[in-house]
Image 1 (spheres, rainbow, N blue to C red):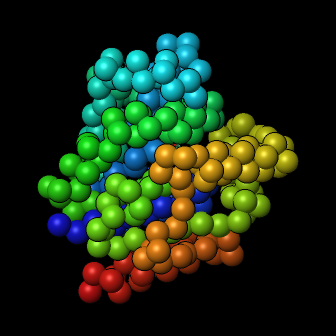
Image 2 (image 1 turned 90 degrees about the vertical axis):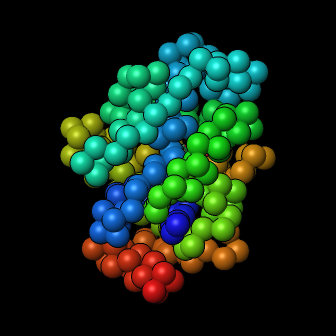
Length: 221
Ligand code: DC
């Protein structure tokens, strides 16, 4: 089986690029962030602090997640409910980053993430795919961009959704999330030694896509 691991900070364009690449390569796209977001959503709905390890760990037996690919798009079901849209909210992203610091949550998701790569060719995106989940991935990419470039892109997205925000606020949120994801003890965001670094700060979508595709194709031949 071929596995492509794409890790990097939030807002670097991972999911949009990964989705398109998976489609082009004919691989299954697995967005592991969605799994952490679904757990974060469950914790929020249960009225728990997403960083409270004991409280969140106690919720895990009540959670069943299912991923399904429908016409190339990944849908995620939390106890049977399609939460694919709901998990994209800002507060759910922050909650996801919180629950992702808890080792019990990471262990809960790890086996299913590994199982998906055993039976099919996958392109999996996240923070620890090349370092922890699939250390033997065929291709590893660390996709990043400067916090400023990511804030500008996020601002544009929010504007298009009719939710204008201040640049400084968006940049501060990005820095806070980076800090939390990079400095946690459990599986922090970092580049695997054998990952190829791709910096998209100065590239537009098509240029980033072409560079990633070339990087992957050079490796898998
Ligand atoms: O990629 P994303 O923004 O949807 O991820 C949401 C959060 O989940 C992110 O802040 C960190 C966490 N995450 C993680 O710790 N490990 C992963 N493999 C994927 C996401």
